[in-house]
Image (cartoon, rainbow, N blue to C red; front, side, top):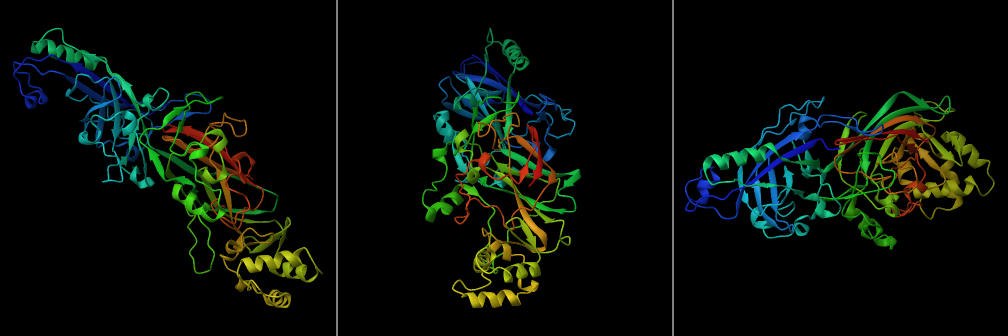
Length: 528
């Protein structure tokens, strides 16, 4: 499932007494002995693009996603205690050119043997590590020597630019086994059968001829959105124009290594992982409405709405066919909930079939109205219904004062003109029975599915974004308008609480996914 592999060769040698460590590090073996030392050779290569299963496809990364500058190899003993850090900076990495066909250009080049502790039994590889002072990981020998792997494998607060920028994508060992110890790859030490230079050279060659193979993952996930051609707009006569998209509910923390998680009905080759806030008990405390938003904002990035005309709306402007990266965000089955699941927000213009394309309109109880039609409906309603709901909207949208009496409201509605409404009106007046769509603009919510083979509602592995996976969302059809406001689960006024299960929420888009290692998933989307 992984696109990048590391070939490691280790060689323990018994050297003659009397040589200096500097001589040994340069590959010179004068008479003498170096106790407790070994040699390690590293070769990095990537697999070609392959198809593992009907639903899962592998794709090589671009050159900007694949370049390897700093290459750190953490060395561990049999008890998972770090012995040292070996640098392989500048080593030629196979397929680091990122050729789209995955042909392996350039070819992998094995490094010269490097001196390492003889007790080295396991390794962990990190490429392009984020080491910005106290904010990133400190992987220097002074910081990690003598520490157990469990203490080194920490989670940090980060933004996506820390680990995913062009020519500088952070990558780390993918791991194979269960638990955090599954991150460490065992290596075999090859010892010479004598102490002459010829025998030592022969042992080095034997080690390099039988390398250990290690896969690495990018720490980021990748999301892209496209619009299918032809695109279906329903009902007949309705009009739809794509306007842009952005990510929301993205994680603010990332682990150096996240444990592999097994789940039922997994697509062959697909994996799931455990991030810092994987358990329901690890997610933000939302029990108190007064602190809920603050707690949620501390853990995740949310696209927010505005509450006044003086505020600027967040841009939802990524064009179709573009990609964005985000930090891994996974959750146990019962924790798959709206407030904590990474999603895509789509901006569009949807005009019902009875109205002029891209015109402004209101909706109320499933019906659509121009401003004049709404005013007429209000005037003809003696009490209750729209006579109750429209004033609530006007007050929430701050078009009339919160304490305005009925006479004031009636007079305002009678004299209301289209230029008295703006692109922000329907957003400020959100969560009301009456909705205002300025120039037909609306927003759709798309929860990102992980494994399409998991069809049972709320089953583990159904939602989330996993490191080194590429999620392709394909908009296929639309059958109704979204909301005039950005769907934000952290909004304290949102009548749909953040603890709502992902499979119990109103889905405006159904999605068909293809996963990548980049494991590549495709998710087809129907907007409702």
